[in-house]
Length: 284
Image (cartoon, rainbow, N blue to C red; front, side):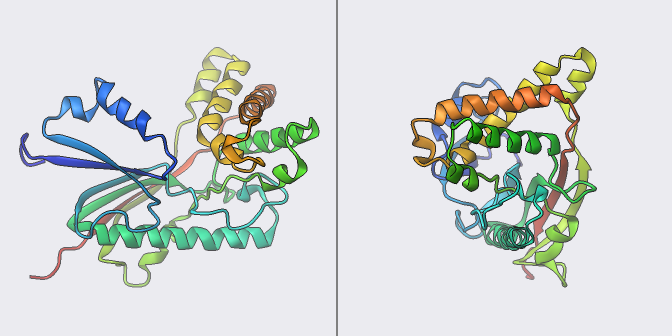
């Protein structure tokens, strides 16, 4: 920002069924909102997938995406032996997820390259992979997998619904993230100016180490999962998210997952990648 009265438009984007009313309530009521703390700032929202162009070309100075690009644009295959592809031994499914992840990252970068102004920047925080090549959250993924099978055994969900349940997220390696830019180092006018992978803190585990409360540890991670992935899992129900069993399913899944994690508390590996993209200025 060059001066306090320099107007800034912030455009929030998400899929069409996102609850944008919650976003705008927060922006209007949170005392730390940029609408409160910074003058001449304005907010709007676009309900479209960012795997397509969603803003005019050469219109964005600074882009930011966090905890989003690890979600695939679609579920490319069913996963027969686990709820998450990084825990699956199904080679065909793993190949399908790998292809979809590559295509989605290619499209995400390509369209941001069109939208950014020359000299613009894009920062991305997304899931990486741990030393075992998995997208992290291992104990949580296993607990969720066991929980949905238990709910199927208790007739809370059907066998067909269980078979459809999967979390369409992926972790990417540094090679995956650099792939669209090979071999020249540039793609759609963009280049990577910064890329690092690191392990994020498991704050729930750190708290458990201090208080020894296993039940609270399990409840915190199950609550996180309910907010982050349960909406996706409910799409596998016969009636989708509007299925009359959704509330009961979600409550039982949260309860069962929390109990499982409380019985065997373990730290979560949370591998992340931070990427900064820059759009090159056109020659004079």
